[in-house]
Length: 297
Image 1 (tube, rainbow, N blue to C red):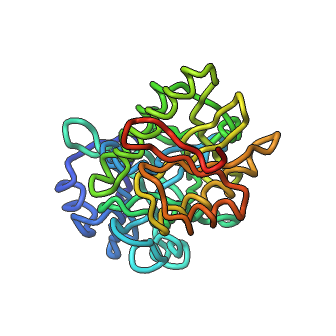
Image 2 (image 1 turned 135 degrees about the vertical axis):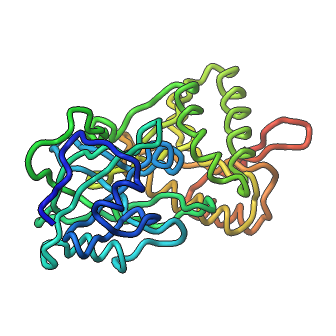
């Protein structure tokens, strides 16, 4: 087929497939007859799942691969996109507009030096999984309103206010309806208020490691005493093991190195308190009367 989409061109998806072929449901739609791969992007879907989608600071388009549940793999549509040059297929990105049409962002090709990045994100069930974020280089001109994402290294370590932090959590809470995240947030807010009444300066911290495209958040940082705190609603072994790993991961991004603490919704078993103490990690828990107790007291 000689006809190729023009950047900025918009049409209903049904018309697009009638013209070029390809699967009408897939996010990565292969049109073998036309020699094209069409990538579809929905801003509402992108916002809900927290997926990177748009041009980064280098002009590379970050596009999250196919697969809504479980770890994404380089199979089917993802593999077809990765190997599109070998199959002589041109790649076009289409972005959904409010009225339901899709507008062509432009033509792209997979970056040869670094075709994709693997990162963490939530799936359709709210479970954490590994996703594939393709790095696509523009071929020719793009639509004037091509979307942009921010991956600046300035995000690598910054504190931000409670209002912004809660706003950033809304998406995650919506994805984790079946989890204890709501309780963990409530616990964090209550402990923060407790520390602030004592005159401590508390922040939530967003961290973006080099090479990642999606930041993660440390629950609380007591800047007065330099203590990094991870919140877990349930004091189970699994929850505390997860908290320990998170704290050790987060700690390397702070200077000076902070002390570590786990905050739980009730007192853990003594064996779990001893586990944390063996690594000099403080355990703080909420008592039934609303006060907080520390294993270091």
